[in-house]
Image (cartoon, rainbow, N blue to C red):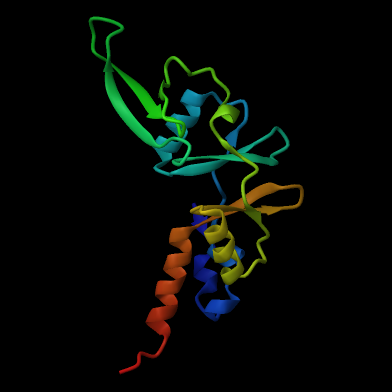
Amino acid sequence: MKTAKAQAASKPFQALTAADLMTAPVMVIHQETSLKEAAHMLSGCHISGAPVVDQEGRCLGVLSSSDFVTWAEEPGEASAMEKKVTCFIAPWGEMIDIEESADQEISRFMTPQPITVSPKIYIGDLAQKMVDAHIHRVLVVEGQGSPCGIVTSTDILAAVAKAARRAPRGK
């Protein structure tokens, strides 16, 4: 994935926007995707969350590690050959076997109505939205609500670290 962070190098910290910080393009999960396929997409891309979109590309929700609290590989007992079964613990504490729940709609597990922002929102306002909502990622959307990027708390911390390195240090 390409990031906009390189173009933000010369901007003052307070002038940074979501467009400067976001990772784009953002991987999306289509609402028709099975739970099993969505789980494998996130795991395979080594990311902790992605927006769920409808057929027009509008954001419906977010499927994240907060929704899938714990991933585990447990040996199955379906055959003589040892089979691996992917499981997770849902936020309400239920252990869900992905193989048994494979065809369930991801809308049952996603966080609906995610926090979204404009690419033009400033870093301070962006960070405040994340703090207020107790979240670690916001979706950057344009037009009809189609995700064009994602900003994580790590992206904001990286901008803080870069600004701190450039700032004069007191003695």
